Structure formats: C-alpha cells, structure tokens
Length: 320
Image 1: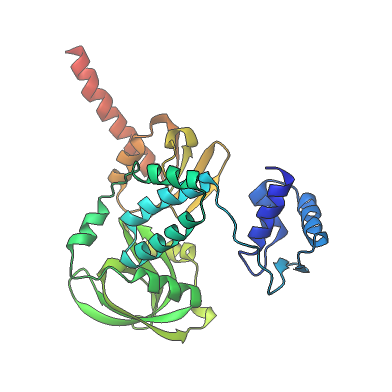
Image 2: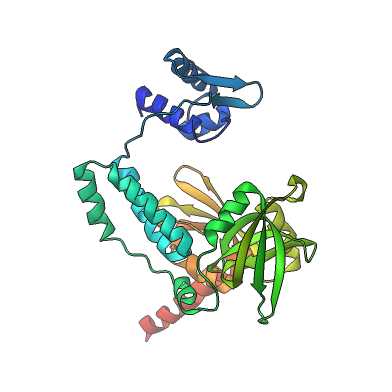
C-alpha cells in the first residue's frame, strides 16, 4: 500500500470510532508508532481537523466527513461472499438489512465491477445444515436479531417470552451483554432479572421480543469471554477449544463460529466453544496436517482415535 492509499485508509479508520488509539492504527497497517504520528501529522497539515486526547487517542472533529468512498473489486467480492453466509446463519431481519446495504454498495461500483460482482454472485453457494431447522420451526419468529443487536449496542433492556427445552414459556426482562453463535444457533447472553443472574437465550426459542427502551446500568454488564468462563464449569457439555489453522489448509474458508481469532501470519489461532467433541474432531480431521490442536487434550486424543480408525479401515482393505 502506497502512502496516499494508507493516509486515506487511516482517515477512514478515524471516522469509524469516536476515539482511535495510535496503537490500533499501527497494528492494522503493520507500521511503527512513529510512522503513525507522522501520517496523522500529514493529514492535519492537509487540513483534516484531527484532535487528540493524551492517553486516549485521535478523533475527527464533529462535522467533518469524507465524500463517498468507492469500493474496490476485492472489497465488493468480499461483501458478496459475506452475504452468502448471512443468508444461511442470520435471521430474516438481518438478511433484509444486509441485502439493502449490498444494493447500496453495488450502486457505487463501476460498470465492469458490477458485471464481475453479478458473475461471482451466481457462482457462490453455501450450504448450512442449521438453516433448515429455522425454516421448518414455525413456532418461533425469525426476525428478532436486528432488535437484539440494537439493544446490545444501546444497552437497553429487552422484554421477551422465552420457551425452554421443556416447552415452558416464561417472560423475562434481560439486560443484554452480547450475542454469540454456537451449536448452529445465535444466542443472546444477558442478565436475567427474573433469575437474578446471567443466562443464555437461544434466539430461535424467543416467541416474542420487545425493546423497552430502558437503559440499564453499566455495572451489570460482563464481556462474552467472562460469561463463558463462568458457564464452562456449570455446563459439562460446553468446553473451550484452541486450534491453529494453516491458511493454506483453510483455502479461503471462513471460521465464522469462533469466539476470537488471532492472525499469526501464515496461520490463524482460533478459539471457540465446543459442545460436541466428536463433531468437532471429525470436522478438524478434514484439514489433515493443516491444523494443530492446542487444547483440550481430549479433543486431540479424539482426533487421533478417528485417524487410527480410518487407517485401520483402509489398511485392512489394502491387505485383503
């Protein structure tokens, strides 16, 4: 990336948050803090109203905005791929919002890029077995995720009618901490006022949901990481797993259900929630030597067992 492109990218980044730390810019663009300071100074000298707060970071003065930015072909292509995933793992409200956003993106592309995007769109398909369950279960609405996201962002209390696994319906007032995808479903994690503690609500078991508009106190929130650390001990079916994937082995596949991902250059370190060790072990087996299991030992042992079973199965046929 040349300096002009980098300066533009930094300016766009500064507009994505109220305050952006210099360290965040340095990490994203792979440069030193000294270079960040020099680039920000260059933007200021060019007339961009950038302010700074000691110990916090940089910010754009209210009222300043860049003109509409054109998308590159690669950026537009990535949105098409993301859209295919959204169609499979998001509910109706999110699918509609993403579709609207995608039309806006397509509208600013050049004619050649529009043709390329249309060709790509018709040649990408994603199969996700969890989607069929949502389409056939008419007892639960399929349009709450957008409202849940809004409540998480604004820290507003949600009122919902929730159906547990026994089919019992209860009304809850929930202070949302975040949303998480695992076990083929989206989960709302939040402080339940009825149970006086943090609870996990599957979005596909919510029959009715209303945003009360009430803003809840900051003191009642925890991060998703903190929540899952607490429930691992309480739920023997859930366990954390850490796996390192070679990017070549992934071959462009998305790791969409992980809790965190760390880019290690030619590898990705992924952490995720594991509720079925056999399913995860069989999934990892498809990557062969392209994965390294850091933890837990039980997952590593199960993959080894499956590999031995396969070897025995095919070796027997060869010998016979």
